[in-house]
Image 1 (cartoon, each protein chain N blue to C red):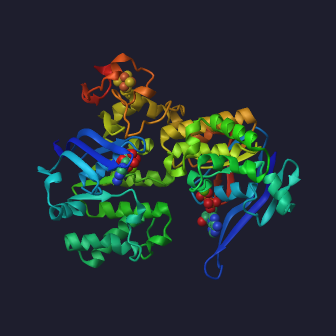
Image 2: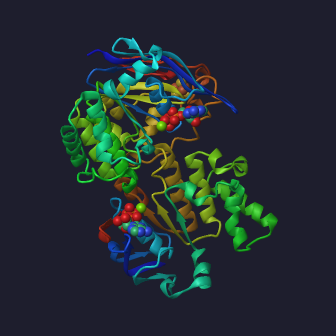
Image 3: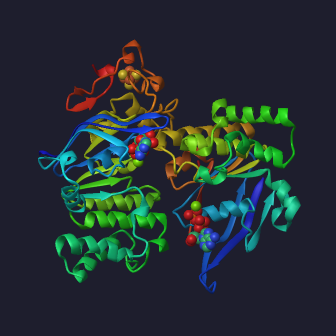
Length: 232
Length: 304
Ligand SMILES: Nc1ncnc2c1ncn2[C@@H]1O[C@H](COP(=O)(O)OP(=O)(O)O)[C@@H](O)[C@H]1O
Ligand SMILES: Nc1ncnc2c1ncn2[C@@H]1O[C@H](COP(=O)(O)OP(=O)(O)O)[C@@H](O)[C@H]1O
Ligand code: SF4
Ligand SMILES: [Mg+2]
Ligand SMILES: [Mg+2]
């Protein structure tokens, strides 16, 4: 389904770009259709960078990303953008994924509009369907992000990410800013949707227990490398 | 053991455009000399407001009632001058917000400054003391850096260092592990264990709470719904909300509590947990008292 081979990414920083951090250092990883893989590791170990490389939000310096048999690392512009709709990111801070000036309805509908996928009525129907799927109510759709709680916001981000029927989801510490009981709700929701939609998921977390519950497999990362892999 | 801090029927409300927010609604508890008292609860339950009320750090639109007795004096009646002496020297406040750091001073200097000011320590010995604490927290060698050179997690550790360095009678910390990863949370817990001080710690991180609490108080919608020893709380939580919180831990099954916390503007009548409670019956339409069960306190009709 999605596979990374020999992935490597070095970040250069400092005034003279003279500081180099090897964020991802020769990683091979494969996630099958309908499989949930959890990725654990301390902060700075390269988890987010790896997740973003698989989504092609960051280009690797070396290695390739293959999605449904197509080598993404060879694609450019339009073709890549088309395939990217099949791959979505759920970030740590739900605020990062939602425009503060938009009502929730528009945030959820936007991907449908951008890709011109449906007319007004179909759009409304689809937005309502997505809203229900993530456990939000119709009344939430009229609200702005600051009028929603963290858990409600993260549900909205999930609804938006699912709008285009993705096949692959990277969840980057999606609950680390949420309360424990809200975390349980959101994780249970993701697991249910994953099964229902046969999604491939990369679930990034630093909570090993959570990783074991969510993942069919747990990969652990340290200093840019996959240190080990455990089947649950 | 005697109560170093005693909070009596504390109420805090805010007048807002959308109505009166009852953030803290009749809270009473005691923190005993030498213990680590941990206040847990979901965000929005009133924990930070409660701590800020104790230290009189709330904005002007806050209306406060009740008493806060510290070493025999009601803090709510002290002058601002007297209060300033207490904050920082007798009661250390470790705030939740990392913007509390001064951007133009090195972190080492701003931690050392209160030691020089309140305790007349020499600059060199104040800095040496701070360096020791920095080392333990994994930010040794960074004392000459400025706050913007630190990640969020590292700034949090600077605040922790600053709070404990003055060796106050009481430490009040608001979410000291917020934004830290598991390893760093463990380090903060270890540091707090090492410091032999009376502490009131606010957190929604139950693993952190378990690693260092002597007693636990659970807050829900501005009320305390349970006070138990940490051992009793984690092995046999009494209040249904406490049970729900523990069951939502990944290690205990990741079972969500149904529904959402109600708005503090429009609180339900009777038990505030009623709409989410799987044990609710007709009696729960009345507000339950915080009742004694053995040496524990619980606000639920089941234990009446
Ligand atoms: N855009 C960037 N520029 C420079 N360094 C970066 C950038 N993104 C990440 N890094 C560095 O790469 C390493 C791995 O980061 P990251 O993938 O975010 O780790 P994790 O998600 O496991 O916390 C860290 O040392 C981080 O500082
Ligand atoms: N200055 C204020 N004005 C109005 N409402 C406030 C103010 N400060 C806090 N609140 C409200 O009080 C409630 C409790 O907040 P808080 O104590 O910060 O919760 P916690 O720390 O448990 O997450 C929240 O509903 C919050 O919105
Ligand atoms: S008083 Fe009733 S509704 Fe409230 S927690 Fe107890 S059983 Fe549940
Ligand atoms: Mg990350
Ligand atoms: Mg708070």
